[in-house]
Length: 427
Image (cartoon, rainbow, N blue to C red; front, side):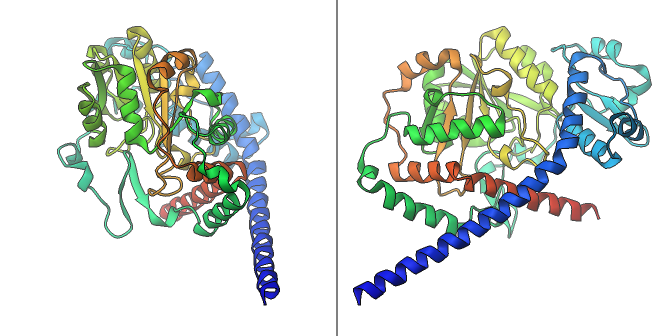
């Protein structure tokens, strides 16, 4: 009887593995097809991006027409359209109806309004009527962000967007991974992890960030913690009591509450359509600044590349620290991942912060922060004695999901879903 039961369990496990293998193969074929289709427009995107940054296309200048670009580069008009849309989403270009695309990227930071007008091409001045200095008027500024919700489908989770149950990580995959980790790790799950988190999870995260987010980090720079709020507390220690931290206004209320509880002074900086207003940055005397460059909550504003460079310039000039809260950016519908502040300046200015509450489930209380390369030893001297607050089993499971590719397949599924929904909305 026991032999039959054992045989039945083995057959069931074999069937599950075969099904899982088929699902993975299908997903990999879809991803390979998408990668091949995206190669052409990503190549054009990189070419135009480099031309804009180098000044070959200066601020305010018009980009050649889609048909001319298609002819010159030997690609389809649709390919050109995809590349231009990506550059527009990142803030390099501004589309003007019935006129074309104009360069909105500026290399020089903290320009006064007078200098902006002098540098701007007069023929396209009307294309830039929506100035970053325009304030964002939102009733959410005076509302309690903890009570904001979209009925029926979503609820407020985290600090920058709405949580959607339809985009949860697939439970069967998670359950299979838990069983596999328990079977393979056994008593090892009872052993305490390193204070920064298990080396398996930190290594998996580092490799994922390198291939998916263009972020070159070492496992030693990563600190694992039970969600963003816990990590805010560690960051407060790094900044120091009595210091001032600037935050976006409006912003997620818990950010302010955690920092204030740890003895920091709060300086709210008003938001414009591209991010924090330049005038607010010029007059700020904060020791650090907490920003959410992608889909800031509750405004859902994403900082343009020029604004990101302005943040970095502000921090360098003041010797201040930037806390980059990158919640939700993995689900960006762009053909590539958003450029992070950390990838633009990984040495000493930016502490990068992210969690898996959005990408897997709010119940998965795992977050991580990445310390600047040149400040890692200094930072760990101040916070490295704290024990990791995430259970070892949860760390091993997440590491396995990342290493086996299940995490990235889930991200790709959600991105495809969102792109389909967006396409249907335009019809």
